[in-house]
Length: 211
Length: 114
Image (cartoon, rainbow over all chains, first blue to last red):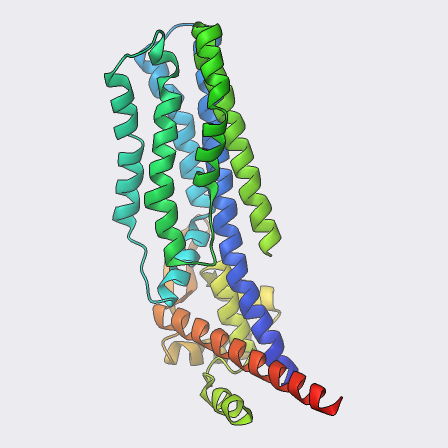
């Protein structure tokens, strides 16, 4: 039989790789969850409690999620670097410019497009939900598929789940648009929060199962 | 099959073949850049052997040391290089093949004995 040290080293090596993937999955899930929770909580409080809107509040809404994102990148900075190393070892390289462009375009084009039209009553209140559905679909196709192709054992599916769950919840939004259109925005926020919680929990669960 | 296993064993990177050096590189792989003090504490290695192994890894260009300013003053970090990362994955993948082949061989021996 083989030397026990060799077997132990092999186990340790495989475990090390799984741990890096685990960290990346947890990073993705917690970042998305925290970002969406902070945005939705702020949007809810601003539009529902204060019931008015101005530029300062609008900027303030995005200041917290932005800070959250910065903190998460700081906390998981080393893990992201380790992930880059893992991809590098497979002979590939993460194209960060492509990733940044994907996110920038995915969260701009559908939102701008949605607010250029006004097909339904109270459309601006809930248009963002439909826009985000397309945004997440674009991220699934152009980011998630790309990152999974670089590292097949990663199998990250958080944006796919987020898209799918928010799509499945769309009939509830549609009902609220017909039944009480003024409240459709809040219904959308709650539905989107639910979708993000489900997708994040599912990704953390998948990460935990992988170890 | 034995020959293949033997050939694969021969091809294992001699630098990483040492358990302490393998542990150091694994720690750097999983936790990222570390100070020498952190490596010594986390792996429970005495300073003397640690310096020897780090020197060996540095000679092979598997790790490099860089000085960074921190809140507690400048610290020297040990960082895994691209060459080190590639060597580590190659080493683990060779180990994987060896373990797989020897398991198959063992199974075959067991079945012929039955």
